[in-house]
Image: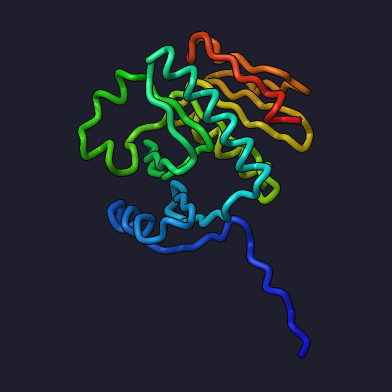
Length: 196
């Protein structure tokens, strides 16, 4: 028997009209899958990351978490956290951080569901299944919706794109560290175990 391999796009895109509550329930009932939703309502189903990408995401999250524990300036989030952006999109950056005063202004119910704000800081680590163009567009979407600093880490080319409001994207080749600048005061991400 001749079998033809089924090739699906990554991420898988679905066109369906869902309310915010229906989308939240879809995600809750399918916790093994990673969902995002574009501002146009298109639902994206992302595959789980491979071991290398997962480990490098973990390294970013650990470093951010250690700094945040010491500084106590905000709240850090991993890639399983959904954020409801002002433009209506639901996004889950690989790592994110929100200033403490913004987090504390949310109600308990808002904290329990998809966080109804755009993070102050985001990190996306490009995985082999990610489209560079689509991830760059997502980074710009974060900035357009209120993110103050964003890092797109492209391991394959050992490059980082730094996104800031009202500025051109800065491209850094072969960096060993990244500074949290005046957004994450004192935070320096050691890239040696992430980008190599």
